[in-house]
Image: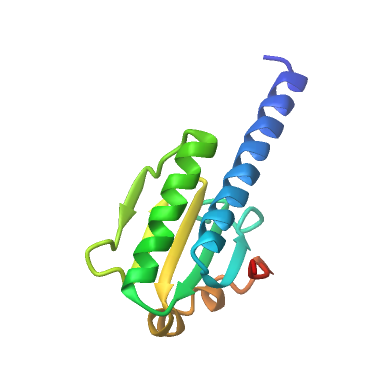
Amino acid sequence: MQANQLQRMDENKSLKIKALVDVIINGMQEKKAENIKVIDLTEIDAAVCDYFIISNANSNTQVKAIADSIQKETLETLEDKPWHKEGTETSEWVLMDYVNVVAHIFQTPVRDFYALEELWGDAKITSIESKN
């Protein structure tokens, strides 16, 4: 393969990842997720993925609704589904792993306890405004 073909493949992958981030954020906003943050891990050595998207909600019912909304939006818009999903039994912390992007939906006290943003303090963190 030539260098320009590899560059186009990388650019295409990057666009797909950014589209996934946008669709996950939209899925969170549709169910009134709070305090949405995007953690860009692309410049962090040994990071487990490219992006974390974190939000919280005030009940296990809302956490489940947000997770369901994300799954519906990604399937309908991108024909993509999570490679792995966990935490749906109690819905205190649902993790949805899309390989390059991982969505975390917390109940508020659980998010405060684990403080993922502090663990990745070297990463670029972007706050997303709530949808009205």
